[in-house]
Amino acid sequence: MTLLELENLVVRYGEAVAVDGVSLQVGPRERVALIGPNGAGKTSVLNAACGVLKPAKGRVRIDGDDLTGATPAAVVRRGVSQVPEGRLVFSTLPVEANLLLGAYGRIFSLEIVSSTLRYLRRKPEVRERLDRVYTLLPALRELRERPAGRTSGGEQQMVAIGRALMARPRLLAIDELSLGLAPVIVQQLAEFLLRLNEEEQVALLLVDQSASLAFSLCDRAYVVETGRVVLEGASRDLEGRSEVRSAYLGGEAEERD
Amino acid sequence: MVVGVSTGSLFAIVGMSLVLIFKATGIVNFAQGVFAVLGGLLTYGLGKHMSLALAAVLATVITAFIATIVAIVAVGVRGRTTPLASLVITVGIALFAEAVLLAAFGEVPRSYSAVSDRAWDVAGVLIQPQYAVLTVVALGAAVGLTFFLRRTIIGQALVASADSPRAAELIGLNLRSVAVIAFALAGALTAIGGLLLAPTVPVTYNSDLSITINGFAAAVFGGFVSIRLALLGGYALGIVEQLVVGYVDPQYNLIIALLVMLVLIGWRSRGELAV
Image (cartoon, rainbow over all chains, first blue to last red; front, side, top):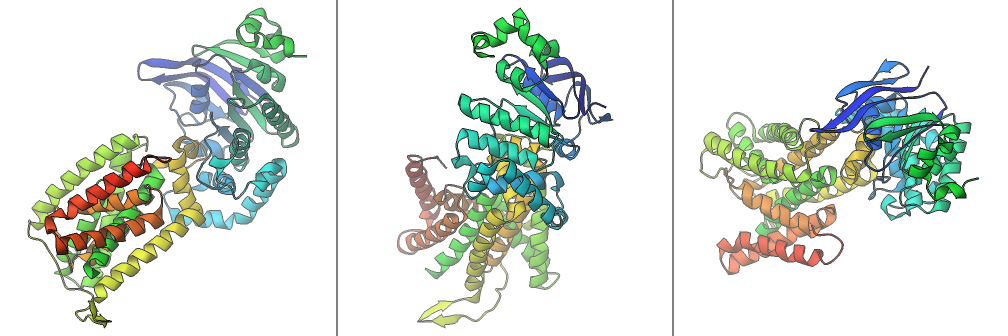
């Protein structure tokens, strides 16, 4: 069964149509890319899937259950977490607090006493998870006391990924992994994500303007333009197509093996 | 001087409450002074029918509840109103609240008896227990709020929501709940400050404006993010204003607050961030 399924998703901002009938599927442990130019609606697709935006039409399903219009918390509880564009770390809080909040967020409610007690009761479990995240991203252990806003771009990306991992996602949706980062850092993060996918069986949905990164990391890809899927298929096949090469790979094509 | 410390305590409490709300929601709440007035007037009104202590507790709870309504109106049902729009909404709420309070309590400043009538003679200076209580509350609130925001997971969740609302939503925090928690806490705290000051400085429907402005000035001391500096700012303002009132002219009191605020904003904006 597909883990995440979007069917004919339409997202509007007032009159403007950002997403115009996008359908896509991500299976368990799969690595899927969503590529396309700036403003194509990639981020809106992710946000509609994660419950941050209400789609005007279409369905969002997780494990076959309808989660259209569900709250972000409900989506996180069902195992789909997002690493947002621009990282968006909680800059004034220490790195470790950023991570712990990733586990607290999904049980947070207006009944602060009961949700906090529930969190404290789960503390051993949360600690264990924190240790796991530190093992996966050892650099974060060194930085745990430092305000997240005072770490480098690559480190902030790790904080954002670690924060999402604290909720034990089965699918990690990553928006613009490479944005503003040095190629060597992007390479390290890509290797980390591959390992995460293989060792922890976390499926990946990677949104990126860099098609070369997306193709090298993912087996399948969807190409989105002006709110519609214009191409989809195996990365290997898409990579070879001339329209994709000219539009998204350009000079980068020669650098690839 | 002593009066300055007690009004300073209220300014500090209001300033810290404003910082708490700002840190959680990014909103500057111009209706904060209303919560202090509500604390005083509700205690007065309820105090006619029951013991003052019980009236004070009830007034605090009612004010906290009203603060949650203010929060929902200010941040919107989905918690998505922009901070600037929310600020304008709180100004509207403050004006509306003044009208309601005028209709309910009239324009006569209200007061009631203090914690104790006796005064302590400390090295020739008469200190009323009321002032001591108010100061202890302000200091306790400063310690408590700092610990809450830095060390507890719920406090950190509030800070996170203002740091990055989008990311906070993505990990599952509900922005409206966050706003409600912050406003309720700040409302209760400010109500306690207001109801403790009322026996010495009678309170009326429009006292909220000067309380808000002084609280705002206190919060500006800490750049709207530091609880500790808002506390210091409140006391500095209270004392300076009392000296000016005593030696120059009582009417200058608000002008001082505004002046201090402008100077601070101008000075701070050279550094990292304006306000």
